[in-house]
Length: 621
Image (cartoon, rainbow, N blue to C red; front, top):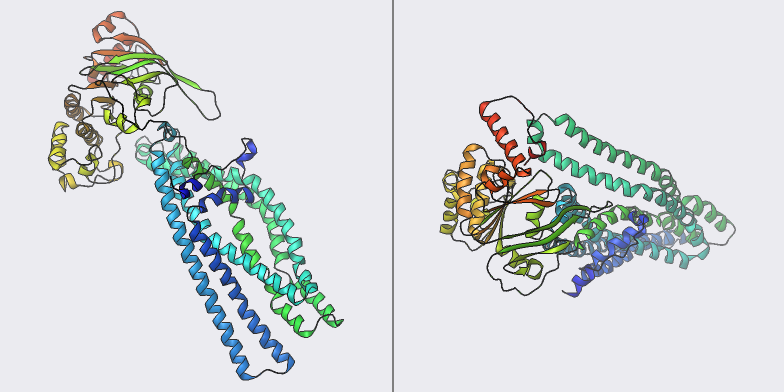
């Protein structure tokens, strides 16, 4: 890891107390600063250029002051006035040129940082337990990866040069005011001394509401994203009113917190703004009194009327920017959570495997829910699956079937026990080697917004066109792919939405066939298929599983009746195991599920009305 990577990945130390959830101006700045370390050369250069720009900004004020002083002294000449005007214009052009260079430099550093950060987080998310993502709403992760990271650009590209420029201008002006006359300098600073504590009170009161407001915005964004994505299902089941009601509640909640935050912050900020922008209230009367008593001359009085009345404007710019630190800091914290997410520990050297036998031994697993007690999902699970055999896993909804399948590919690590492939614990082999051993066909297939061929090459990037076609034929997908407008070059749309569910599933099977892994896991791969697609899918699955170690999460019991062994899960434990005929004869849970399934199938075929299933808990197998 490079030095810049180490700097950027240094964790931000925070207390574990509840108070650590709140972010104010100072904690926000502390959260933001580490992100400037990657491109610090650019940001340092931008700061220097911004400081020089601030110094050049004082040039026009100096030229105007000198011109007015000559006029008062009665020594003004046309040539000198032209010279002062030219100097003022030259300083102004120089100031803008230096500031443009500072902005250009900071933007280069900012965009390089964002690119580096997104790539590194993407790489890290490829190594975290997949449960880390599945336990989060899509909208929340999307907001962090897109919106919160993008907001860092505001801090990196704009805040750094703007704050440095404004602070430099302020310091240069205060120094200049003090050099000309220390008494008038103190008079000018009165508004600063009075207004800053008022702002501090307002920001302290506003910060208490900010955290809840930001959380409500996250909930609103996630709810809106889910509402839009679920629109086809919502409209099909006429659930628009109910689902939109939830989204509306999230929007109203965010609006309420925003209004409350504004009410807390607005009165004190208004008082601060009015006082800070009113140096005329002190400079004019006290300046005239000092001039009248002979303590300052006319030239000094005019200097403070020209320079002193506007010296607080840069401070307003600084504080206006700094008020955003809390909001930006909360976004930075969310980005940091992704960037610091714990990755699955893995070894670097590949293990020597002895075949493709899958062994699950005494496996326990529980979900660690945030803020809640652990929920035991699996307990004491043990079985062996040999190459060339099919192991079916069935059970009531929520029994832990899909969790068991996902543990085999290390979505999470087991709490107790071990899962072995070829005699090697999967935790003792690199993730890449594990993924090479297993092909996983999910119930819900995901396709990239790319061509059919590109989606299949995910399994084998160097696959030839002939290999892709052979895999598609084996998956009963070639015929419908050839019927697409551009064949294998046809774009499938976002998440494959230009294809039917059965077509997407057949492409997923083709992808698994192309991968040619020795172990295949099918997680209810035909659950949503219509009868026509189910026949095509079943034929594709028959080709996929030949000679492989196969684990099938069963949805329709008829599809696994011929399995070499069937595991019946209930409440996270294996309550029965054996082949179909043996399990039927035992009269246990599997029998109840089979009777419920066959009864439901008979009702569907005969068009019978709704009747209660013989076994309620077997109805959702």
